[in-house]
Image 1: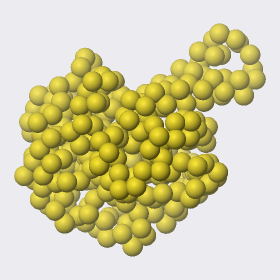
Image 2: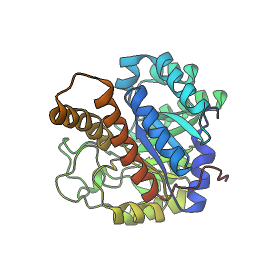
Image 3: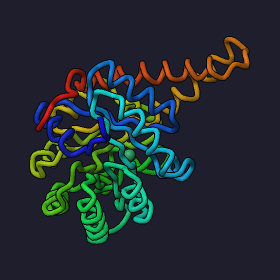
Length: 287
Ligand SMILES: [Zn+2]
């Protein structure tokens, strides 16, 4: 199939009370592993790239992998640009063939965030590309933010409603107490806010900082309106650990063997998450 946009995928997910997994790929192999996992489960899937990865490989290479892999896949695949603060990078990715982009102007004051997001939505609409935007401060566990405890960093429901009102976002990422990286202990999420924001905005919600949350927390967030769940850190660990573990166990210098171990581990872990999020068998779902 040709690459798809995220909008219809996520509306179908919100209506069906499941979530589409959004996994960060770093190269051709990890992209292939993510899509293979989705194929195995007949699930829609979002392959997302960080700005760092885009700069490392260049837009053309990444789009070429995705077009080749998605082109011979029977499941819907979206190519999404994760957290991007730079409008030039967003513009280049849209021109190259990304079907979805995230503008992250969440560190700016509300009005500036809204204005920047509005510009990206206008740019993306023309190209038929879907948009994700963030409100509040999701941050990283390494940042000095008391995750889940400090209201100041969470998205305010009234502001969330005002933000989403005229933006036509495919998915909205309000800060609800999750963070990027590896949690030190179970984070306390603001479920009441998530519920209120999902209900009052009507927009599918993106859950960031998915790595390390318990199965019960994932299920609760999805039941409350999360339709896109981001898994990045877990893929990084699988990518490195599978390669290193293989080499430590076998001490061979045949690169295709540790690469195979790497793909197998990523595919297995992605498949487990897709199943947990309820995405299996939803490849044909329409909103
Ligand atoms: Zn994120």
